[in-house]
Length: 471
Ligand code: GDP
Image 1 (cartoon, helix red, strand yellow):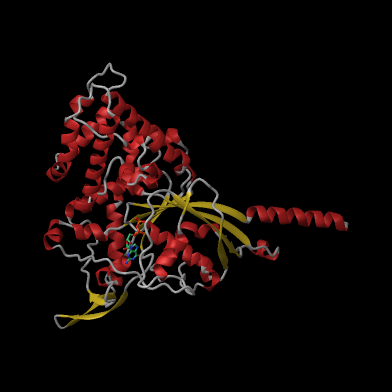
Image 2 (image 1 turned 45 degrees about the vertical axis):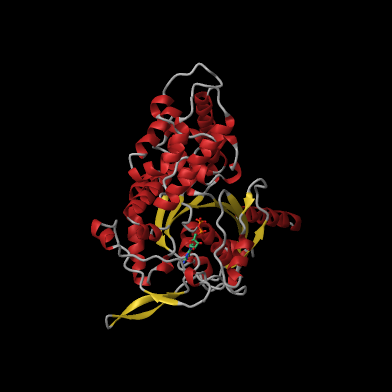
């Protein structure tokens, strides 16, 4: 074979190698607000950017086999999306005293280029390193709670909200916006200012449900996490009495017409658009769940969190939901459930946390698996804020945690505590009677610019979510 033919074959082999050795993956991170999305992405990016020098990732095969060559941040693909503020998060963790990164409130993304040595001898002989462009996308789980709205009209939604007000605590909080709404003559021409005021009162009611009752299952989700829609008229609507909502109106400018129009607009341009513009493009998904704060807050908060998380999982249940089938064809093939903030419990409790989370998501997980999506469950701490040690209790030595409580940020004195036992299955009545769990937020550790953030099992998450891409 002559020289030019040989080099042409070599060039073709090289091109082929480059093609198959440049992969792309879009990883979505979600969870209810406070679940730990911002902390997770900050730590994940940090672990990857620390590159081959990061020796804290033994559960990630690529790192263990010394085939991970490093990562760098490159420009994100979607210029209209907010960038995930990685540097802001790191600055907060490096400040004195260190603070948790400020949470995000909408969709944001960050792109990393990961370089590695492929496993296959063939590619290695060709002396090629390979790359994976990884997009990490953060979005609020609350936005997925709006899915059921697509099956309702305005009157049905009002009916649904009226039913939820059978809970006397919610009914009490609802008094203000309800009394404002009752003053409206919905058949008369709409007064924009009055409508905006009532929508504001309704939004405040939703915030109070979150704050005071520890509720997570909030609809419409964008009202509490509006992202770029803050102040837009599409969020200026609210439920009214179901009987009035079902009435006919001949006035095309009436309040009733306007409320109906805004509800429909919200479904079409806010809810559906999120699925069509973002959800359809995700390849892998991690759903973060904070089981510990609701364990602390009590039975109703815990049940509500369970309801909300399972509602979130309906969005991965393409087959069951005709709407989703019509909106897009699914892409996600792996979904990880992660119980966050595992550093709030002693290590022997981690298996309890995993089995508790498995029960919390059991219903949703069945459907997700039916769709052929590969799932797994892990307990992790994105940024480990405590150390494990021993303490004496009634003359006995027990495992305990040591860390600086957020409430001690002024005096920087560490506290040693035993937070209580995590139930390994859904808590029974006696758990709530004894209120056996104590959750107090810890200050994050002081970040060191030269080493990766301390974590628990973030490498296990990386292995599940990305591991198969590095063959
Ligand atoms: P997001 O709203 O889902 O983005 O939640 P964040 O990431 O902002 O986390 C909310 C709060 O949870 C933080 O401010 C921390 O107090 C706490 N947190 C999150 N991740 C961890 C973790 O790994 N360990 C500990 N101890 N606390 C965490």
